[in-house]
Length: 266
Image (cartoon, rainbow, N blue to C red):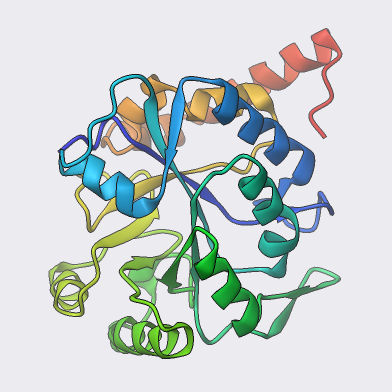
């Protein structure tokens, strides 16, 4: 499989309000990133096309394949990110728990809304792949296994019943499924399990480590979408990079360079 050739980007949210939550990307930074994908040597693929590429059923010769995914299903995705994706004719994947659809939650001092069923149906009709999401905790291995098993079955059925489409992808923010959970995913007809790098193992379709992009520093973004980052992202050596905070050093160097150049990152 071509797992070392494909970058799957993981966004948590795109927001005009820059500092509600540290993992959310400001709208201006997101615009700049999409412009880079559009003008660079990239081909943005839907997750299903990305799977075809991984299985060598789709050939791409003149560009780097990349796929975009968004967790949670906040209304910000529909209001802020989706219009820009359409402007660039980019497909994307939206992962959401059916338990969150049409609800609200408080993050810090802000009330944040999720998309409604009507919006979700519209998105599914307009080039957005909908997948199920386990948001009970950041890491799947810290959630009671009976809850995960129940959600794998129930989330799929509820989304399919409401939207009238097949749900083929399941996602979490972190962690990879054990053998029993993997077998359940396969038995239920899921094609992929989307998580976050590093997976510390050889990736496959049920441990696809996505690259989380939450930095509005463009230099860091360029690093994360580079071939070098893609090469290291799932390797065990990544834990040493994190342990000795080498990624933080790279961030600080980049921020210093930006200050010297007079570049605003916010």
